[in-house]
Amino acid sequence: MINTQYLPRFYKACNPSYALNMGDVLDRHYYIDFADVRGCKIVEELQRTISRISPDEPTCQLFTGHIGCGKSTELQRLKAELEAVGFHVVYFESSQDLDMADIDVSDILLSVARQVSVSLEAINIKIKPHYFINLFKEVGDFLQSPIDLSGQAELSLGIAKITAKTKDSAQVRNQLRQYLEPRTNSILQAINEEVLEKAVEQLKLRGQKGLVVIVDNLDRVDMRPLASGRTQPEYLFIDRGEQLRRLKCHVVYTIPLALIFSNEYETLKNRLGGGIAPKVLPMVRVKQRDGSDYEPGMLLLRQLVLARAFPEVSYNERISLITELFEHPETLDRLCRVSGGHIRNLLGLLYSCLQRQDPPFSRDCLEAVIKDYRDDLLLAIDECQWELLFEVVQQQSVKGESDYQSLLRSMYLFEYRDPAGRWFGISPALAETEKVLAWQQKRP
Image 1 (cartoon, rainbow, N blue to C red):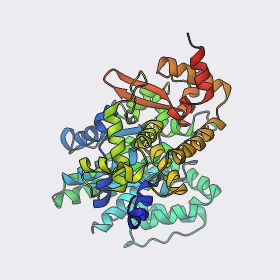
Image 2 (tube, rainbow, N blue to C red):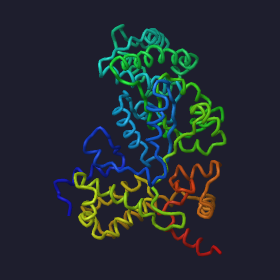
Image 3 (cartoon, rainbow, N blue to C red):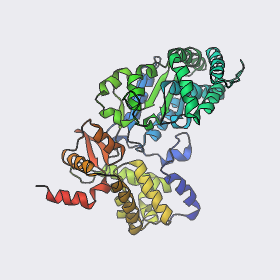
Image 4 (cartoon, rainbow, N blue to C red):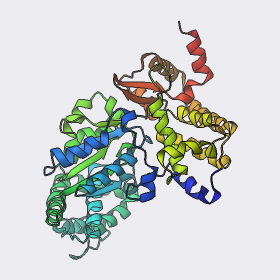
């Protein structure tokens, strides 16, 4: 049984909402590199583009995948690797600054400006925001609510004051948008000239290679339709993509996975990606196309679970400690298989086991947790969606229609990569339902 004094640390490490920070020594012990079993080396590709291919010219790269599949952890690793080769990296979760249900381009640009300013102020690089001092005064007059910002105050403080006024009031937010939107190009120019270009100049004087901004969680932007008939992600990343691309530093944006299946994918690639396709982070491959285990993926998922409990123990020695966590090794394999290679699913199931009992976990405990998870999935599936799911099981591919996008967003389908390319599989928890088993028996 795991030492009880380490249980609180294990609880925290298994929390599915906890993103690893690669700057933390303990978190680095938790990290498992899944690149080989995902079928792609995305962090290496993003990093090479910035540090090797175009270190001195701004790049704009797009990154997507299922929510919870490990993007934030991989972006934290990208941050650590870029810092190791001399870049100043500003990583932030946009959902902490912005309302994901109601975002415009000016919100994203001001959020980038604020986060860069905060990061630079922390290393004693002061930005003199001449344009913004005037803008804040005009905004204060427009909203009839003064925003005090003296010539010596930080840019981040002024933007924070605006954000505070708009975050809790849709009415104020709309008023401000009406004022800012016609000025988006001027704001963008000021961010480039007064913030980003000055920052790159100062960083290079200090011997650093440049500035990288990683904007995480924009993949969580709400899919709601706008008055124009466009969804919010289509408006932001396709219609306004050229503006988001024009920031004068290296930028990595996370974008919603549904856009990969949009009819306007090529437009997205060209406007926001500059002709470069978004990088898609697939699931950890735990099974092959024929349904059999993919042992290299299973091996690494076992290590992920064991590392959360025994971070200081060596890779090879952890295997002998499986029965400290599970009554039988097969119970751990069952957990890995039913997760489908989705990291947050795996941790969520493990956390639910912890809520029921201390390790070592019984098979009955895990099966009860899986049953609850499966029942939650089943609640929302209608007959039309079942037909689409059966189609995917047969063909192992999806089409671009919105129906398939909803299946991906709802975590009914998972995407995998192997040497033959991209393929899709139904969630293993759903694959065990009576509905799917009965359908499979009827197949010729």
